[in-house]
Image 1: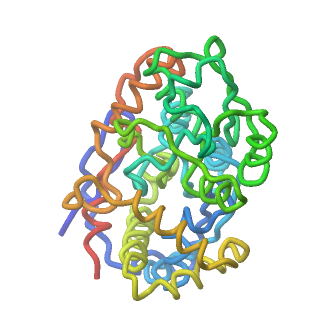
Image 2: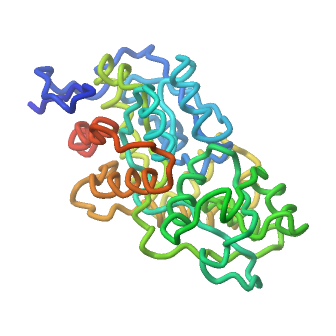
Length: 338
């Protein structure tokens, strides 16, 4: 029998509880999941797991809600309004630095999901060219802000001396800001790039390749919730893995899109666009080392995120124990499928 692990702020301690079988969770266990945007495609494992009955197999009934950015997710978790969310790593690190104990459980986008985007015809070729400019972001404290600051800091720039971020929303508002010249670049996700391009303004990503390890959003919960409900965390993650494997089989694409349409009908109206966006999300979700399993958190990549926040001044001092913020304690169980 495998053992679960209990999290503490001092690290991960082996627990004596035996691994629970599938459907060991009570059938009336209701779970609320919050995503950082209305996009069902970006949170595809949740919607596919609902549609294929994988959560039901684990005894879980999952309700989804969309909020505006990672900070709103963390607020919902802290207020007890949600059980799981999909925030970015930088906001999770910052929340823990403020004493909000959140554990990043499942890395669903091990490759960077954000990019510094400029219009295809722009003369800007490198982040260095953004010195003295105004850069658009979706929200003032979203995961994309930490991503961009890390890159610009690497080029010796800081805000507000060398550039300015302004929140312009996503999709249509971001497109309008670029077209009016209010911003010269936009820090956005795969979905943002696809939407802006789809609206007639093709975008180019100037993010240096070395920042591909600044991974994107993943599934998280309050540390207290994880400690108190390890069997739910195990069942939730195993359903995500099953949904991920199902989605990656091209033979299942029509069923996948049908499930995503339940989560966000408008996003799936143009199936050509939806397919292209889903392909891009799946490409960013390929693990750097597949043998370690779906959801694995790479310590070196967490250290890179942490160090970038210290360098940019977002963290006034290094955290005493970065490993307390994320865990791989459930990865083996998640990847042991029925």
